[in-house]
Length: 221
Image 1 (cartoon, rainbow, N blue to C red):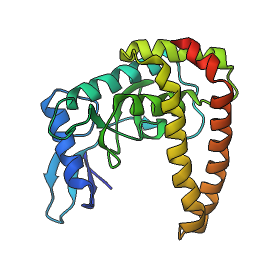
Image 2 (image 1 turned 90 degrees about the vertical axis):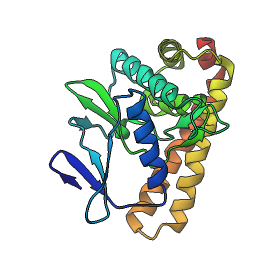
Image 3 (image 1 turned 135 degrees about the vertical axis):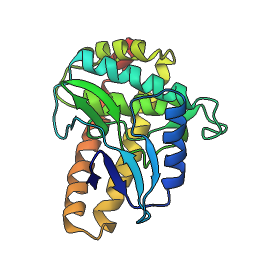
């Protein structure tokens, strides 16, 4: 819940890692995430509230906005690279870099939120997830158009591991598909089960689209 200029959240199993990550990001000058302020008298963690909007549903992101986000992701990864939190991995990944976790103010992307899924990982995984969710890979846009956008955004991030990126996109899609498929049968909430079934069907179609257009997408590299 919001309280003044702060957000108060219950402590959870991931809280200690997230708190350490947010502190690391602040210490390394990454200004595109909430700051951890401590724990209040009710045992809730306190985070800074970030002004702006969070988009849900279909959004027509401009190439300028997407380029800004790609550069933010690079800064986020660089802030954790080689850290104790990253361990033996390249970086700490957010693992849900999507429109619903990106704050926009005056049409400018300014921050990422909801780091509850963050964990040590590889840069390519966050980048692939970002491309999937922000470009809507599997939607109505022509594969060649998407390939050109991927090329520009990979350049903005500084990513050079080209041919493996489409494989990473498919891996992210299949990861989320497995989770949504599980929820269709195991979620206790009827609405969540129904939503997950719809989402799973959409992801299957997106996987088919990426697989079919793989050669065209890989021309970006």
